[in-house]
Length: 69
Image 1 (cartoon, rainbow, N blue to C red):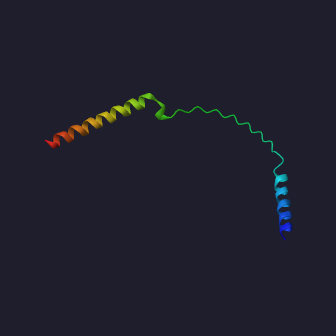
Image 2 (cartoon, one colour):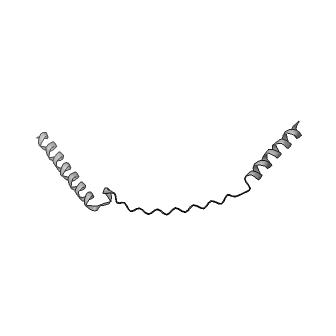
């Protein structure tokens, strides 16, 4: 029984090995050139955003210090 099982397993494994022997040749040529610029790539957006953040931070700290007195 063990020899029969072993021979069946060896046969199945050899079929799997032969099935994977051929290498597929795939040639894919994709040439796609797109130039897009995102809004967050511009430096002026970061400058304006930082200025607004600093103004909000100053406004919040001043209002909290006045309410504490």
